Length: 145
Length: 145
DNA sequence: CCAGTTGCTTGACGATCTCAAGCATCAACG
DNA sequence: CGTTGATGCTTGAGATCGTCAAGCAACTGG
Image 1: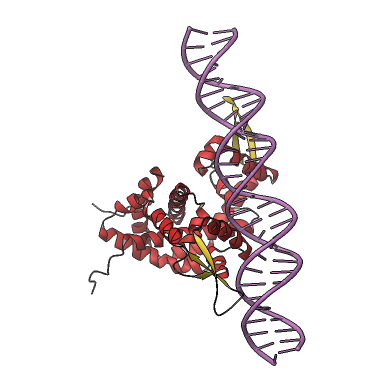
Image 2: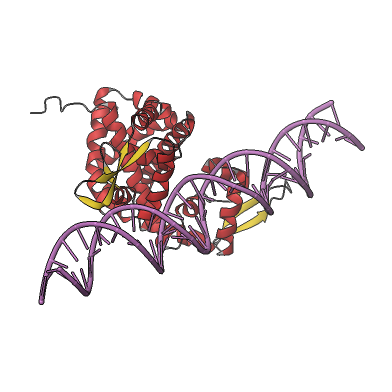
């Protein structure tokens, strides 16, 4: 009954991965927009588990430091983020999410309905399998970029 | 030997999917940049299997039609794309990739090294499994957005 | 103390994005 | 027909995002 189910070409798999990445990004962007955030602002906010220096944000977001200045400016103007001096290096400014910032990004995560309902389509075993496969892709994808 | 390998929470899976989507997008953007294209220009070019009306591009890219005008303007100025009148509706302009445009986007696809080497880490069975799982995610993710 | 490096900001400029407004064309109805 | 409304595309204004070059402050290693 289960002969070989015609293995996908690398190109097909690549296209599917790209399509899903795009769809998830749209879901994220649309959800963030409902909270008055651009997708980049939401992405930055999502990095703030603790205090992070501007330079660190630029590295994570893979962009110029001067770009981070503007994004943090706008988030700070809305009270979602705060700049704190670094006690051990006076050049550094650490960015911290305010309570409102934390709450906002938590809501965005919770309200990504398309993504949530997609993952609900899988049972626990399937999620485990998917997780293990994706974990194998991670190192190559992140280090060669 | 293979007890339950601690099933990932939905949040963990979600984070992993997001991280991989981002990494692949970076790979795509960096590769496109080597050919003098922005990521958005490359993405638009990737849609052109045949003639596509401006409106259709706006739908696929999930953005305003006026935005497409500018992107196509720049691609056209570089000879990667052409605007053709639609024979059955004089309002419509169909966008077609020139030979150079086709060749350029083909190269971008071929040269996404991070993505290719990541997929090479999987054998054929694993790719089949991954493909089937991702296909199940697709409908929910794309339609609810 | 001095030279070089690093962290952040500013300013200039281009690309992306949305919205409102405008023009041309189509489609439908009387 | 001809008017009315919807549709496709472009233009212009204004905000955000992104880079680069330049500048200032502060750290680091002699």
